[in-house]
Image (tube, helix red, strand yellow):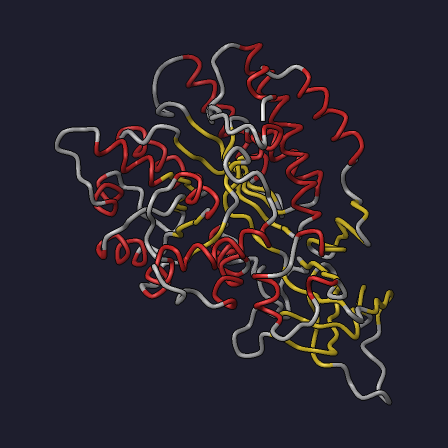
Length: 434
């Protein structure tokens, strides 16, 4: 069978611990999936037949990166350091304004992620519909998570309408091959968490919980439990759908419980460094079997959606947390940004994050012939410590080009910049200050 695309003469970063790097290799894509790959055959044997053959000499082909936690609506406010509400205000005109900010902020976020090698992301915002639409148009994989500001079962007309809209949105994307809807409670009050957890269980969608906020709110209440695992268990939210965001100082019981329920911890190093909070060493989480994914968080804290930058920050910050140079090795950090990130987005049935036959062709190409990547001794270490998002020259999701030779093909970059500039002109003056 003739493949759609065959990449030849390149270096493959497979994500497989047994054979992490294949040099002078080929990879074929057929019907949006990886159909075969391996070391290039002898010169007397031609590479696999394909409608298009692409020479990757001097380049590296790898799985797309996964940004497991972002707030796309904060992208237009990068550099301001201003806290922004995650839940939408109640007024209709204000809600419309929020939707406009989220719509163009999400498009700008998708543009930045495509340019820097991300192919999947999980967002939490006050308007999941706008993020889902942007992700759909961009071609990226996404979980657009709706921030809920109150218990979904409460009897106010606004809450009933919000819940109805949320259910319709989830139904609309139920059969979508790339985009789905999740839920995240803004308040971690037990009653709210239980009801939101029940909703996510009924609809089989992810539940994103900020565990730092959960513990901080718990400490303010007399008689509440300081143990994270016990709090989550009391609220009936422990399940494989649970995505815990913001690593904090966890106890041994917390690690064991999170591992036993197959929940995922998402670590955002920029948020940890900005907040000054201590966090459990990621090596301890991995040793207990807790999957760890990585995210950039909001742009008012981390300023960037470049996941290659996050890999570097994670590896170096882990040494600070440990108080010694000993920490994570480069392959471990890469796994968090690829395969374990895919697991966090509940895409186990869609095995992105590794190069394997039958996996979706979610791929990025990096140019290795740059001064800051020369000389090259160890590919995983170079990607973690030396590579930048600007090194990405092409990317695809499910075999569809999103960017080719640094030209984004799915979004109107000029229009996005114009719309963001117009929105910035109408933003509060405090947000325009450096």
